[in-house]
Each structure stands twice: as C-alpha cells, then as structure tokens.
Image 1 (cartoon, one colour):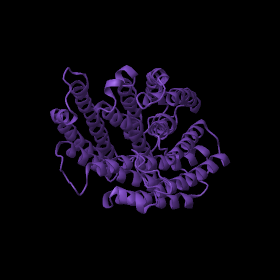
Image 2 (cartoon, rainbow, N blue to C red; image 1 turned 120 degrees about the vertical axis):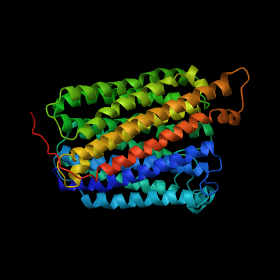
Image 3 (cartoon, rainbow, N blue to C red; image 1 turned 180 degrees about the vertical axis):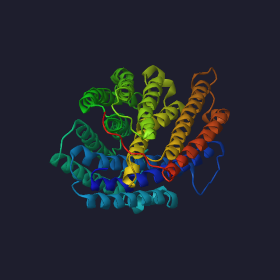
Length: 462
C-alpha cells in the first residue's frame, strides 16, 4: 500500500464479506424452503428470504466495488483520495441504509413497509431486485453521487490511465442506469422493458466494465506485465462488452409484449455475449504467461485467473444455453435461468471482489505483500470449495431445469407446476448440500485472514 487514503477501502471490504455471509445463509434458508415448505414459516416466508438473499447480493457487491475503487484509484492516479472523510461518512450511511432495509423486510409486512415509507408518493417498490423502499433508493442515489464525486475528482487531479477511465465509465453507467428504478409505469410491458435497463444493463453491461478494470489492475500488480499490453486488451474487451451487452438486452424482450424483431436482435447479439468473457479468459492467461515477477500472493493470483474462467462458463456458456428465442420459448423462467444466474454472478462479480480483497487486504492490515503460506493454503482451499460447489449447484439446477421443462412444457401430457416441483426435489436437496459446502468455503476465506505465520514480501520487477 502506497497511499494512506487507500485505508478507506478496508471497512468496505469487511462489510462486503459480512454481508456476503448473510446472503449465503438466506440462500440456504430458501433452499430448504424449496423442499420443506413450512421451514421458518411464518417468521421468514419464502418471498422475504428471497428479497433478503438478492438484495444482500447487490449491496455487498456494491460495497466490494466501492472498496476496490477506493483502493485502486489512488494508486492509479498517483495521488491521495480527494476526501477520505467523505468515503468514511458514505460508508456508514450506506451500511445503515442496508441494515435498515433488511430489518424492514424481516420485521414489517411488505405492504406496511411500502405505506410507512411513502411509496404512494413515488411508487418504486414491488419489483424484483428493486424491492427497496423509495426513500432507501433516494439515499442510495445520494451515496453513489458522493462516491462518484470523490472518485472522479481524484482521477481528474492525478494520473489518467485506461484502467481508471474504464472503471469510472462503469461506475457512472451503474449510477445512470439505476435511475430507471424510479420509473414505474402502469403498463406491465413498459415496466418490464425499462426494468431490464437497470438489471440487464448493470450485470451484462456496465458491471462488466468494472470487473474488467479491477481484473486488469490486479493482474498488472501480480504479474508485472507492461501496462500498455493490458490496456490494449482492455480496449477490445470493453468495446465487445458494450456492443453485445446493450443490444443483447433484447433477449429479455421475447415474451413480454414487445415487437417481434427483438427475437432476432436479442438472439443474434446475445449469442455474441460470451465473446468478451472468452476474451477475458485469454487475456488473464496471457498476462499470467507473460509475467515478469513471481508475486508471493498466490491466492490472489488464483482468484484472478479463476474469475474469467468461471465468468465465461456461467455468463457465457450457461447464458448461451437458453438465450436463443426458439430455445428460450421453453426455458424462460425455469431452473435453467437460476443455474445461469448463480454461476454468472459468482464467476463475474463475486470472484473479482474476492480477488481484489485477497490482494489488498494483507497490505491494508499492515502486513507485507501477502499473508503467510499457511494462510494462503487455507484461502486456496476456500477457493476450490466455493468454486467446485458452485459448479455442482449449477449442474443440479440445470438437471432440475431440464426435467422441469420436459415434464411441464414439452411432454405429451404436461403436468402442473407443483407436481413437477415435487418430482425434481432430489435436485433441490443436492443443491442444498452443495450450498452448505459453499458456506464452509466462505468461512475458510474469512478464517484465512486471521492465520498467523511468516508474511511474504513483494518481489522487485524482473
């Protein structure tokens, strides 16, 4: 760590990991409710557990992105953060808003929550992933604006790099597209049309820019490869990401009442969406092969190399499985979608946040360039436990989805939803077991940072 203001990233990283643990716990609760319908009912109904699970995912990833930015930007700009104090203030506001929102979901009926938070004045609640009360959404906008002000001023007054500009483009895109969360038309087609402008253009658009910038930063630090080489790759990757991601939004428009031409546009450009992820795989392995230094943080390198591989499998391969309109006609809304979503989020965003935390946290805690070898062994065990269990979660959900589609939608005598759910319950039980193993891996990740031993120092450039 070279700049004192980089310490502002530390609380963001800690909050991200704690909220991540909460997300997985609620995921396991949901998994049990799939097979034991009255588990924790009426204390935590399924719809509440699902809101908490998905909202914690969004919030902890945002904490991770913000922490990564506060660590990355001073080093890239070669100057201290514009206002470290503002970074800490925004942290506590954001954390407080997140905790209050989750407690609201758990303790107050959702209709009551909407009424007491003034949703009738500016109705924004009730949509998947955007269930937050309107007042919380407004607070989130203010936090993001303060964060962007702090980050943008820092970059403008310091060294300008491709990594920081790509990151800034992704962050501003995140803020701009979130504004569509405030547009809630009465027409259901329009509602879904613009709802995807938040959800899709986040996860299959601007978030990919953030991921690419963080991955580039980590690989530069770990491999010592010339910045010019990394920047050339980054230019091509973001161009393909924006081209395929923006028009590829059309694969969500197939069956919601939009014009038929979206089936062509959505299918063609969605079929191209795996390309930037595949390019990230080539990019990461190419940088590893060209490395000019052997960095002691092998665990961070494992996360950095694993990120594009799992992102390509989850977002690319599993996304392509059901993205063409003739296939999606049968698969949409099935467990195939859930399989794709789990591996895509894990590969593309969870792993990159864990990678930057793995790289930065030893230095933020006053250690050398890396934790001890013993600590890194524990962390690498956590990598394999989480990654392999996520692969099995995806496979089990894929099996459930294939059987669901055949029994419910394609077979000669289509069966009802609940009858089919009973018949595929074995897949849900196996998914739950894999989820428990995932949680064990996450706990090991946390434990690894508290394992003592001889710390490793950074090597000089070759």
